[in-house]
Image (cartoon, rainbow, N blue to C red; front, side, top):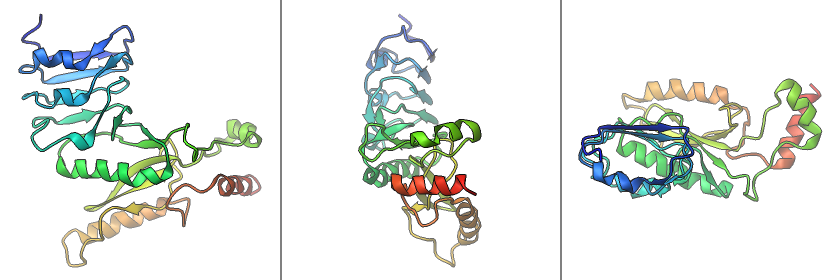
Length: 234
């Protein structure tokens, strides 16, 4: 065995199999766990929650599951960096079934980030599953034009945005472009607060980015196609 192992790294190896709970024999020594792009690795990420010295956990591209809402104040106490796969509720790339699910998943991630403000969670996003009855793609009529000019895809991805201390989420395309209006999860800061000036400055920047004005969630497929036809005829 490797009872003194402090760092474990494995990336892009689909020959690796097993359950991450087997790492519990290294509970007292592991500080870094990077197991990514290894889809046969399974388990629940919470099996590592009580590792006393764990600082970095990256399980992207594995089949690990779980729910970030299960993380309590005493869990992952020393963690500095976290990347969870899409099989985890709240993980990066998590896929949900209905447009109406977006507020709950965004609030779950926002609440976790508020609980752990110093924890690094880079480039978090979630998306509407292609199996969803709400999902749609580009019509065949746009395929040729899309390949030639990079016509925008529907805004079916969700990201968190922040203006000062105020956090919300918005729908946008997979490349982070063509956003809808922000759905704020926090109230506007008080005008007398020290944060207000910074909030207004960042709010204006966010508002200038909005493409789907008046839309706080993706437009219907019909409305999206009308926008594309208008764009092509400009």
